[in-house]
Length: 70
View 1 (cartoon, helix red, strand yellow):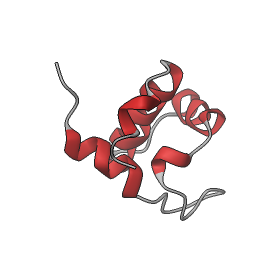
View 2: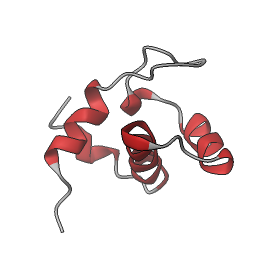
View 3: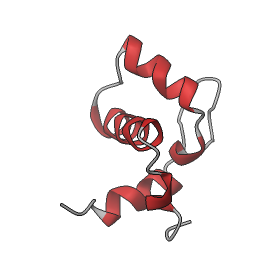
């Protein structure tokens, strides 16, 4: 199954709306921050889905999926 290109595009454009990394795109968040969210719980809605998706991408070494979009 191919990843949804719209979601991949959003990972490179959607900015973190709060916290230490406010203004940073989801794709540029450090894996340690994504791991923290995994332990504490991802926020509801679109933001949580994007953070969870980026966590899976980074922890599985799949960041090359984003290269053509950046």
